[in-house]
Length: 394
Image (cartoon, rainbow, N blue to C red; front, top):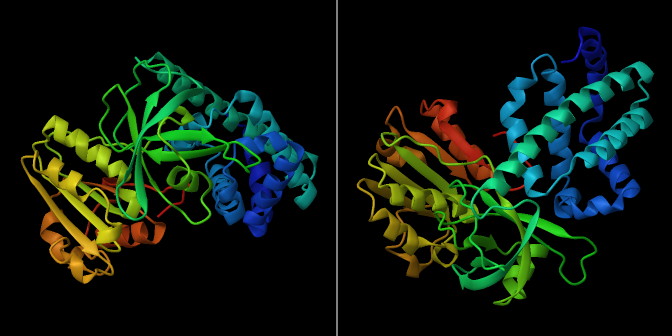
C-alpha cells in the first residue's frame, strides 16, 4: 500500500496529466518503441496508429490515480488487462522497461520535480507487482490444465470455411498431435505470426466459436481493411500452414446458473464469442430461457445463421430476433426486423428480472444497446460486454 504522502503527491500532479490527455501516452509509446524496438513484437501496431491504445492507457492511468487508496476497486479492469497481457506472454522484466519510459515521459513533458517522479515510481511498482503476480497465476493455470501450455505453441490450419462474404472460420489443431486445453465460453485464442513484408511479429486475439472438445480450436475472422493478420488469414492462409498460439484467455465469459435467463446480443463479427456461449448452453441443456439477438448488414454478411438455428433447436426455451440494416430482396424470410437493433419491439423478451445480458459488437452498437437496456430499467450489473481491441467503457 502507498502512504498518504505519496498519494497526495501523485494527486497534485493529476491536473497537469489530465490537461495533456492521451498525447502524453502517445509520447510514452513513441519513446518506449524507439528505445526498445523489440517491443514492436508485443504491441498491436494498428492500435498504435489509430490512437486507441494510447487513449486506453491514458484512461487507465487516470483510473489508477483515482483509486490509489483502494486498488482493489480496479480488480475488474486489472483482470481484463492481465488476461490480455497473458495472451501476449508479457514477462516481468518488461514492466521495468515500461516504468522507465513512463517516468521519463512525465519528466520530459511535465517536469513535475523529483518528489512527484519518485511518488509515481512507487505507485507504478505497486501496480506492476499486482499485474506480475496475477499474470503468473494465469500462466500457471494454463500450463497445468490437461492439454495446456505456457507461451506459444505451434498449430496447423485444418480447415478454412467461408461463413459469409466477410467472415471465415479457421480450425486449428496442435502440431504435436496432443490434446488442447479447455476454455471458458467467450474466451479468445491469440494467433502470433509474421507475414511476409511485416517488420514485427503480430499478435491478434480471435474469439473461440465452439464449446471445448479437447481436440481443436475454431476461430472466426472478419477481413478488415488493411488488416495484417485478418488479410493473411483470408487471402493467403492454406490448409496445413503453421501458426503459433497462446493459450485461451479473456475475462468475458458465460457464467449463468441453470435458472438464469440468458440473452446474447451481437452485431456483425461480434457474435463470435456468443457462438461458444450458445454451444455451451446447448450442451448443458440450459433450462431457462435463452434469447439470441443479432444485427447484420444483410444476408450476404450474416454468418453462422444455420449453426445458431441448429443449436437453438436443442434448447428447451430458445427464441431469436434478427435485424438486417440494408436487406436485399433475396433476404426476405431470413430476418425479423429492418434497420438498426431496436429493443422496444421485443421488450417482452427482455423483462425477466433475473435476466443476464452478454453484449459484443462495434462500440457505437454496444453503446446504443446498453443505453436501451438501462433506459428500460435493466441494472448495469446484469450487462456484460466485450470490445474487440483496447478496452473502453460504454
